Image (cartoon, rainbow, N blue to C red; front, side):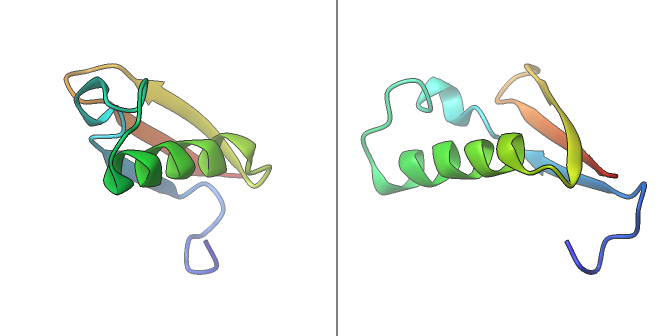
Length: 62
């Protein structure tokens, strides 16, 4: 985040992880759930989750 200018976009692909974020079992599944939760809770960004294929998270720095 320190390198991202205000108004800049952070784009993350595959955030739905083939639906495994709904019932995480493997370590990678839990890592994706944790990432999504951190983006959602971060007051420095506005975010949207696009449900296209495996999901895409767009986060714009305030």
